[in-house]
Amino acid sequence: MQSGTARSRIQKVIGQSTWVTLLALACMVVAWLDVFQGTQQGIERWRIGDWLIHWEAGPVRRGLWGQLLIWFTPGGTTQIWTSFAGQSLLMFATGAMVLQLYFARGPRKAAWLLLLLNPAFLFLFFGLDTGSAFRKELLFFFSFMCLIQGLRKPQVWAHGWLCLSVLVYALGVMSHELGSLCVPFFLLVLWQHARTLPQAQHHTLRSPAAAYGAAFMALATAGLAFSVAYPGSASRAAGVCDVLLQRGIDGFMCTGAIDWLKVDSHEAFEKVRQDWPVYRTVYPMLLALSLLPLLMVDWVRRHGLLLLVCLLALLPLFMFARDWGRWIHLYVFFVTVTVLWLSERTELKIVSVPWWGVAAFVGLWRLPHVDAELPFYGALFRSLVRAVKALVPLAQQLIS
Figure (cartoon, rainbow, N blue to C red):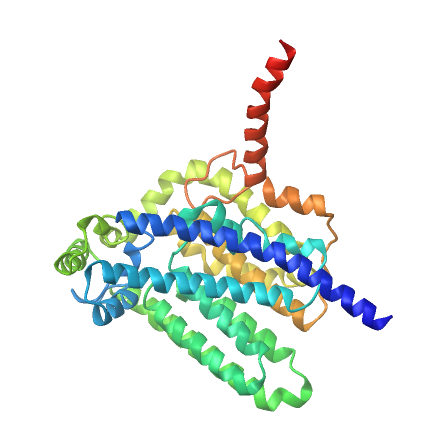
């Protein structure tokens, strides 16, 4: 009887994991192909251009990744495609670790799919709005997943994963300032890990957790201080572009994220303020929809105040950048992964939802990373609309 039950559980995991993995992979491949085509055409001034910012013309925020490309590539298309390859690795590796974490617990209730297939979470967010993919938050997603892996592994492997997480985080905070604002999520996970350790392991593992937490905090502070000290200017943006032109990169790549270096905080705030009449209506609704699956988990409800503090830490992003969908996605990613990790360590309660409820939630809406307007139809809704439009002429012919 027990062997039959175990076999049934394994079959359930394999069956669910197959179609969920294929759907997640399809979403990532759609996003990857979109960036691949844009890179071939030389038009990725944001999704690739942001990664080309460097320090050759002087210190400036967001420059470390691009500086490494300067040091280790000859320039031209090689520099661009090397960055593309690195971004691809970060995206697919992050997705693979998320799926492995989700299925490590065994068969889950249908309600858990609301977290994994939330249109504000990694897979559908990229698949439904490919313009959101390949951004620099991938560095922090990958770093966070390495941290999670380190806390899940035996001690002999743990420090390797944790050191990799710190190294990638260091690269990230010197490549984009948003990483400094994400540090509360890293500290939250380390705190949760330390407080739930068995009594026998308190002395051996609590101190390393504190040490890694201090490392993340120090890096976040240093990265934020650097971005404030060297925010960029028109002359620095021109200098960054000149170096890229000398290395054989088309000038169009300078007209996106690189050109944005000349925008100061006051101008950035004014640009956001112009969108406020629309954003204040649409994005709070999208935030509420994005958080709905998480609020179904008892741990999230019990720690609502703590998670609110983590959300408030991201407030500068909403004040100075128009990509409000990205910042909601950023928050949803960290909280979702934290919940999935905790669900493997302890039993979390989640509100039961039927399969049709999961399909409706997943398919009827999406989260645009920028410029959202009502209505924001999801993939299922758009498919239904297309089907109706195709059937109407046929029905008219039958009636006539």
